[in-house]
Image 1 (cartoon, rainbow, N blue to C red):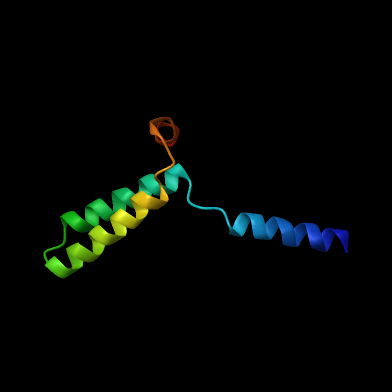
Image 2 (cartoon, rainbow, N blue to C red):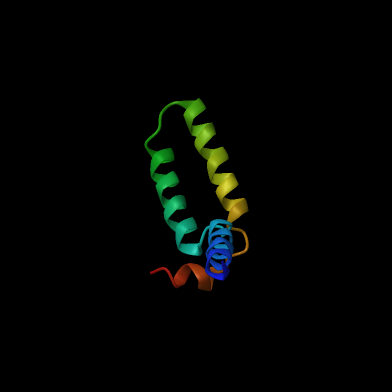
Length: 70
């Protein structure tokens, strides 16, 4: 029973974790490539909105966090 509770607690903790700095960096790079290759204005606006949301999620990371990804 104790193991079951620990596994559930660990799963809850891991499931609630946000993005890492490296996740933010790679997702941002992917969005930039998509935006640069897109011609449809509506799609560009949608991708820009996604980029703004990503920036909000990743605002707590600083330059050192991103440098550790390289």
